[in-house]
Image 1: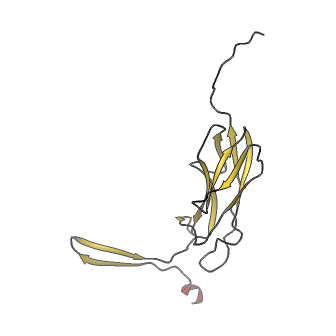
Image 2: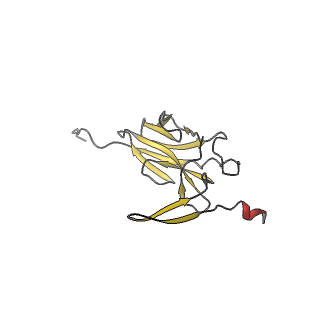
Length: 151
């Protein structure tokens, strides 16, 4: 019986309201149980950008226990890192506490990581584990000039 009390509850209320039914859904907030790193539109395990890319971001997505995407827990703050700053750096996004701004430096690979430092909590108050790192490949930009050589 004790476990049943901790299960999420959804209540659907249907009221007749002109011009049609009004649907109200009451749900428990903060269902996140796990997090994953996402680089712009790319999907892990390997994300790719070029040295010429601008405005690329790394962000954290949160899933519930059914692997449905949910909003970030209140108060969650992500600290991002790159293990190869010669390839790409990551700076905190001042407007979004679960995103970082990517600055590609040169072609190569780097591992992007994320830590919550205890700020991402499940509904029961336990911490959500830091997501596994993602490999980011920075490729060269498109050809910008040509040269002629004689061999």
